[in-house]
Picture 1 (cartoon, helix red, strand yellow):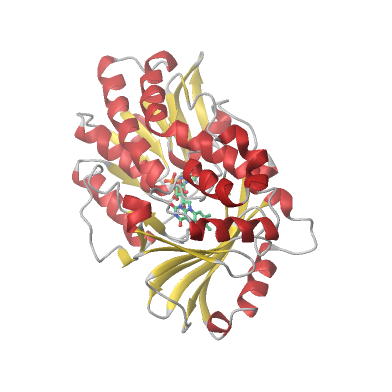
Picture 2: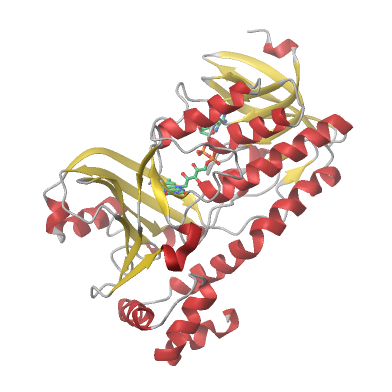
Length: 399
Ligand SMILES: Cc1cc2nc3c(=O)[nH]c(=O)nc-3n(C[C@H](O)[C@H](O)[C@H](O)COP(=O)(O)OP(=O)(O)OC[C@H]3O[C@@H](n4cnc5c(N)ncnc54)[C@H](O)[C@@H]3O)c2cc1C
């Protein structure tokens, strides 16, 4: 309770997977006094995620696979066009990108426990309410813990406060998102359904304008069934939930299911801002807008970024230099690793939203006929160009 008197090496706002992972790697790299504050009373709950991941980042992040938080591994993904054309993407095509469905609440707690094992301190039900600035440097956070207001000071602050990040706004790093860059999502966990639980399923086209419907298996007869719709595509006549209800109604195997929970939430499909740091502050994960604009997946990118964030945070604090200039080492490393693909997929998302159902039918039809060795935006465009060249004319710049 005497945290307002302490000075931390590192203060992380948000105990999602990225906050915990940044803290863990800062501790592994030598920082001793690290605090993570979390506004919720339970890390990881309630879950606001479809829980689909690739497991390719586990080794790099030193995470051991466990049945406790990996609910189901899948053989691949199936894509469906509005007319029902189907494309199966197996391990041969997707390589490491084929993945699994998590138990996010358990996973998030596990990430926090890995950090705690390195000496990281967690404070729950503690909400950041504002930043403390001295000159042009951020030196702490104003916090509220169950009604008690206090200040926490640290050499470096990390904003890992997710999609709705206020730390990013208070720090002057960015402003509000444009509606075309927000996916509004709605999901049920359905039990007692009939479907192929060996695959994740993605339905493209007007059943989810600007996005897609997903079915991610949580077992043989249960799945996360949800959708993401680009917010600017909603004209007020129908909500995201109504789109999903309509989709479920049209699929007998799903219609008979029972919902055991509901999730609503937003995902940023913006490209990352020019900088995610300022003096004394860095952003990570959804707060840094690192979500893949095509898939809406944020976990894999965010985890890779969080490791880099923790390493550079430790270096900056140890060298006594948490200036924006020093933190540009973080920018450089994560951008080299992730930015090309984020930009390419952002451009692809901008084009994909213009496609109509007939065009989606042609794309999936064309891809069934070509030998795709690797699943990439470039390979997809080339594959489609072979059968429907007119369809990719407007995408020529991306090739
Ligand atoms: C419906 C939906 C489905 C999704 N499906 C997938 C998927 O299948 N695969 C995938 O990879 N990604 C998916 N995502 C995205 C994924 O959930 C995020 O990328 C991921 O959770 C980001 O982790 P994070 O640690 O950056 O932020 P979060 O997990 O959002 O964690 C942020 C934490 O900060 C806390 N916090 C916020 N503000 C404050 C404050 N002021 N003070 C203290 N604490 C604060 C929050 O309570 C939260 O615990 C989905 C998102 C949604 C909404």
